[in-house]
Image 1: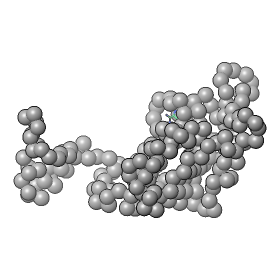
Image 2 (image 1 turned 30 degrees about the horizontal axis):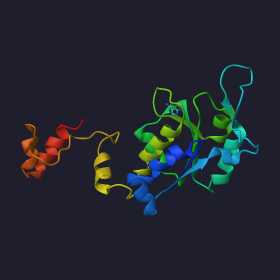
Image 3 (image 1 turned 135 degrees about the horizontal axis):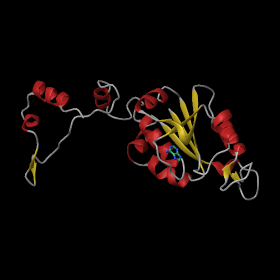
Image 4 (image 1 turned 60 degrees about the horizontal axis):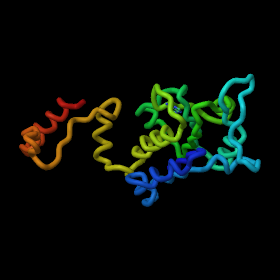
Length: 211
Ligand code: ADE
């Protein structure tokens, strides 16, 4: 599966996608994530990506043409989804992560908080998604959040057993408490049942203690 993140700050995005599980999954060829600088698709000397709003008002608005050209350049042939990150979009959930994991390519368009020409949402993006009811300075963290949540659902990116366990609950994020060594630290102990070796009892305890 391929992820393309179009942003004016690729240098913010790249370290995260190179690190940890996402980095390893790319090395193993399971996923491919690329951050692209939106300014590549500008024509003028200053590589302008925004302009003043029609109708007046404060702030700048991101232009439609660079996004349109960027999407045309990176979009594959089929089964692709173009997502605009937006505080006013639908709130992203685990259900969306599962739905988006069915595509071969996701293209994230990172907006800036002051605004994006509405034609980007209306004509270019297939949907606008928010990661929560708060306003970020830009869409980079949102694109990374969604990329991370979707990428871990791609087969064999993470431990299959952990994923299988998740699929037993409705949303995929109800988890029982986990413990590792040592058995006791500062007088804080691990529930004895987890040390009992009785798998049936452990399973029952885990179900009863799912958060
Ligand atoms: N851009 C600014 N705030 C955002 C949010 N909460 N979700 C997605 N994109 C955003």
